[in-house]
Image (cartoon, rainbow, N blue to C red; front, side, top):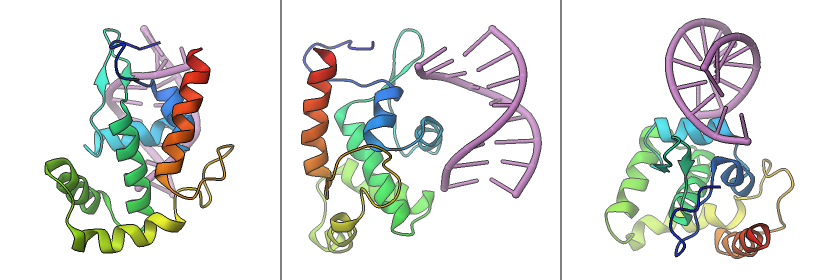
Length: 130
DNA sequence: TTTCTCACA
DNA sequence: TGTGAGAA
């Protein structure tokens, strides 16, 4: 649909919605809040990279952790700026363990962390693309 | 199918 | 913070 670069995989909002378990509106809403910054196709369709997927999952965790948009912007700004601080990870790894697939995720997979999710998503992408 | 804006809670 | 409706 929106594979512009053959090197890197890009996803439309439809697949991102399926991957993240978020609704299309939530994803667009996060973009509006500048939590994510997907590129656009010639037809103005949003195109998300794996970095965007990870960011959206991060947003999910942060929101679930009790953060508001402003707080998430700070967290995302940090990781986007440079590598994460060990002290900051202290709280991140705690929520990282048990969030992800808590209540949303309609028909996803029995994953328990993002890393595992990303692997599954990669397989799914190849499967769909094929 | 995805996009946007307006409006509601 | 997130969604519904309407229009394109």
